[in-house]
Length: 310
Image 1 (cartoon, rainbow, N blue to C red):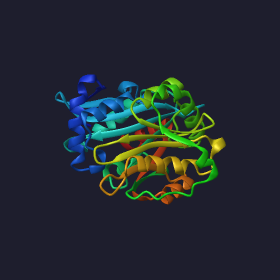
Image 2: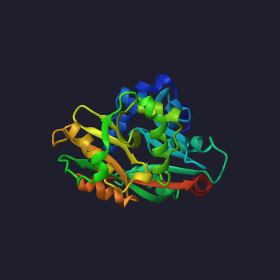
Image 3: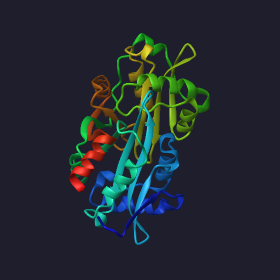
Image 4: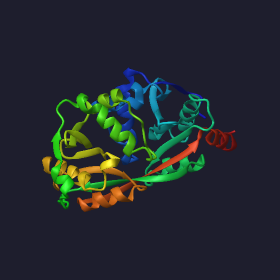
């Protein structure tokens, strides 16, 4: 390991250096970036990231050469730590990622804590890293793109629903948190949100609501960009699923944003959710790329670390 590398917590003043790091990393691994300063600031504000409290950076000679994004996520009944490590090309194969990894593993105490990470199959360095430590692949996130929305069959239940963009997002935060927590409870990437945390999250998104008889039945969170848009999250109350409401909600959002070849819509969906994959295909979405989700317990990773590098 390079003795000139030091690991420390992330600081607010690191923002410009982080953006530069992503830009350099993207020259050899395009799927890593780049990112902008506003995007980085918005990312840190997400409730699970807590302002980057558990993030770590690697420095050499006062220059930032690596970053570990680390967040402890409440899965309801248990916790999971999510980890992503980015290193500039010239600092690879010098123990930079390993030093960041060790520091993140030292944050927690329990050996049974799950550690998750996402790696693109076309990122050789990332795939080699998870292979070396014995991470198990548990699912894939399928990136899908829509350029020509297809109108779904309009069911009676969906026809009766009211769909509109939310004005005061704090007024519906508790209802959205409840729907999110019940609809996504079995998802590998599930994160439990309190009403207060959801209210904070909603301020960073465009929020669309489907209501029936004055009650929120589903929601769609979007992130419009200059030449495209992202659907960050879609969910329907489990008690009201299976009636076409989600399809009509998403189609309404797509048409409101005039999605086209020049202004496409993107989203990610789990490979373990075939029903959602089928729905998105019906709406005109087509798979574009895949990102693999890996998981291992903290104890397994520590044992693998000692076997391979001690």
